Length: 190
Image 1: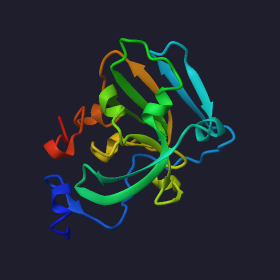
Image 2: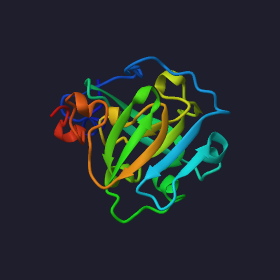
Image 3: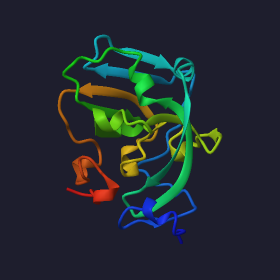
């Protein structure tokens, strides 16, 4: 049960949990960090591929935020460490027509975001949760965290981003989930 102080942090239709439920489509991939690559492509002046070591050398930060799953659970006060989406995009020059991002992950998973949502101050690519390396079942070695949207937008096992001049549905959006996913507006499905 949420405290009176926390109630204004819980979107409609959500229930607070102290657990961290594991939900995903497909199997948890095995990732060899020596071979892992993160690709930035699409509407950028020059595509870029980062190794794990190069990614970890980028400025990193810690974000504490509430997260909300489309299935109805919310977890308050989660703490993530990684590289902000702003700092990551700062390593390339975007073309001016870029308006959206397709996040790409293992198992052919994708999710779409507007550039504004992607670049929100609390959005980051996380490699740690609550001070520990991110476990594979929670998206390790790297997952996107966009806490102001439903958590399916926070793709697990990310391997890259593609910058686009339009919006297009990702994996769950193709299957009826909302194109944006704002929990405060209960944007669960189309």
